Image 1 (spheres, rainbow, N blue to C red):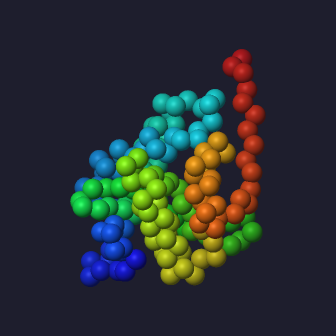
Image 2: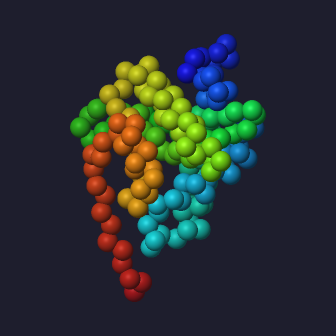
Length: 162
């Protein structure tokens, strides 16, 4: 992707990645349900949706959100922050990545991850990390195809209500 005079990254197909603006809020929040894919079945879907909306709103407010767009349509969103790893390394952390269903498998997700990778390299960070649901096979295959390696496993014991 080339960077244009507005600081946006553009590819040859008209896809642009840029920093999110406050007026992107509605389009960003419309992608929140996509973040529920792969959520464990014992988790509350309404609570998960509220959490996803809160994460996106918080990232937008903090200026830590990038969007992919083409022809004036918001196609995807990614959040990134700098985070410390328990080893002491500093990593870029992808909190959320969501792409609209119509943009799925059309390069928007790859473009967003590439923008985060550039962001991390510019800051001298050592890695890009993220978490996704164990049952989200589509996301796990996508990240593996981009070179992400599974590093940790989180285990949960769901408890029956008392």
